[in-house]
Length: 418
Image (cartoon, rainbow, N blue to C red):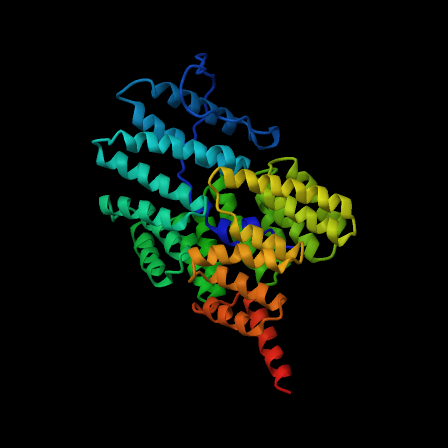
């Protein structure tokens, strides 16, 4: 079992975060905003309110929602609201509400053609980040390029371009943009991108080193730091060091109790060790905190492995409802569907259908090609598998899944020649 929805793509979705300053307030404003025309702020579940943090978010939302009513503060307030929506999407898992809310808010700013070039730049950067989160990578690149023309020396826009280039398979351009970013501002976000690029180019030790720098650059307890730690743990886990990964996930929960993604990864560690009862217990806790589709997929795997067919089917019904909700909000879920049909239903026809949809959009991306290779191996089509393995290997990635596929197709070829 792997927590697929917080691995490669979400490896740096958090890096698209547009953090806003959280300050504690002793009192809440009495004014209501029922008449203000902005997307609503959904209530957080009790376990992720984190004391003053949730109170501060509510106060910031109230202040900025009211400020949209005044012409001289409108656009800046709308941008602040978009940042709040982006962060709440990550914290709460309510992507179907918050990403469209952020885009709606940002489009209001851009439609007004603000004279302030810096405000337009920041709105474009934020919009490109949301588009990346929705897996609309080509669109995100176009938006980011508009922002880059306004301010090419900004670290954040170079980071967004790193992500867009990576997802579109433009790895040489991603490296150049990452170099620019880390030279402009060596911080959590830039070190994290360097880490990912090192990993996919086969330098796993260097990736761990860079991600360790990212963690040290963050403030303990903040969501961004927790995700950097999570990604560091995932590096250890993916390359076989479950003990170190487990220690990191547990440390996250010390600084940020009930952090659901750390729980999801601890469940995966338990699953890989064969302790399905513990995996189920941890997943139940994670699912009670946020409606993250990846947790439901993990739970379905547990049910399948323990021969609870009715529970498996009921959980998968929920998964498909959640995926459909994401699609309605503009979220491209092709690879998620392909993975589910391949690994949970053994339906290679449906898996290849969805994977090819994504391949047409991103033919040079190594993850897309690795997914196709995995499907073709399952279909016993070694020749097509090898075509996509070759494309998935262009960066010299040492990804264990890719290495395994290479060995499997090589051994199959040897057997067929006997």
